[in-house]
Length: 494
Image (cartoon, rainbow, N blue to C red; front, top):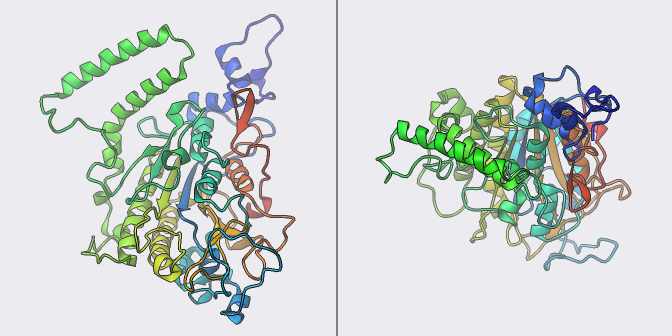
């Protein structure tokens, strides 16, 4: 609750106005809701007393589903090179998810320094070397579970159990929209399917339903399902559809008037109204063919789809991931607040996800190179458009992978330590925060790990939100994205 706003002070004996009520209530975030109602970011000359000054307006979350291997991509461990093939000894009992406690396994690609900061990156993510001075790496991330479903939910929602809003839903609830004709929170799934938990990762849960993520498939003929009338409805005219919308709006208002406080009805009305507005705005926003040739070349999309072989290959992965990145940029510059981009959600064999139990090099290689090409192009594109300064990018995965082998070529789950990186939106680039131990098995300083709560607290802070005050009353508890945890990681901030 924002108690120190002037709108909160009401003279004795006088009932508060609607504006005053919004400032003093609304599940702990009425003031931020009012900010959206009064004209988005321009309505308030300054944030409420004690609130952080916003450095970012929008967020992009890259999520590598299946658990990307930190020690093969970003977190170089020379000790593993020296001890490669020797029996692993962690100095303590280890409960592996599968049979993943074989000999030590060196990084599967060579590392070399990039940028002015000299950050060591694997050759398989070499395209990120062009933007590494903009990136801040966190190498001491820890999770709570080595099970994909629970670990994915934790990184996506802040809780291991289903039934809690995704981070994008909290941002949508807290800040509202920058464009009433497009969704506030958009999800770009992997074209092959959903990650563990499916829609539960981006559902609004107990928040008002309009804050759920809207699914968009940039590769599909119809990127947004059911946005336009079915082709069989060729008898529908523009005038007839407009008249139907007016009639439905009138019926909805009458229905809502007799059911005050029914959030489900309000959310459904809002979604229908948004869908109508999106019929004009969304096709233009997702028209990637309108991009100039030099932009398509930047993203590696100038050659078009090839007759790809059945096995995984980097060109195909670049095509799909870069298209999502380009669509994300177009959505962001048109006012979408939060875009979530997923990579790798297919359990066929050979794997096309990051869960590399059998062969890390075969599975990670194309996925990592495709991701690095798309993400690097995305960062360059944002920078040249002046959007990087107020767009925060978060790269994450549900956990890491073990430094020991599974079956000779694979790696088992490692929830004990993994890597995130952040960029833009007031994040200090070219730095590393936190270290893993010599094996990449656990944090070097086990007393000071970094958790998803710290990442979420930092993300909200950069958006101008105190994570302890972004709350919603549910089942008698003031719930928040960071639960009862989280500290802003000041070392990451400009």
